[in-house]
Picture 1 (cartoon, rainbow, N blue to C red):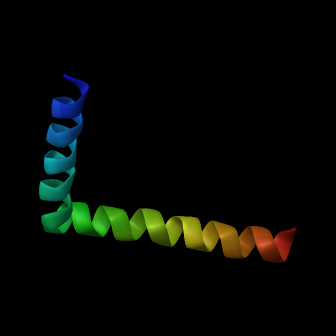
Picture 2 (picture 1 turned 135 degrees about the vertical axis):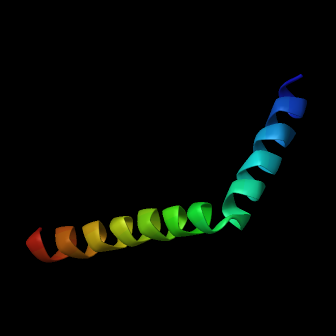
Length: 44
């Protein structure tokens, strides 16, 4: 049961990542984390 749900989630995530909206959402999240890391490094 848990394996099926995991596979379903993975397929849904892959389909989401293949769409432009999902791709740019991931780019935005990664970019925000990178900016936060750089800022915290300089501020800290």
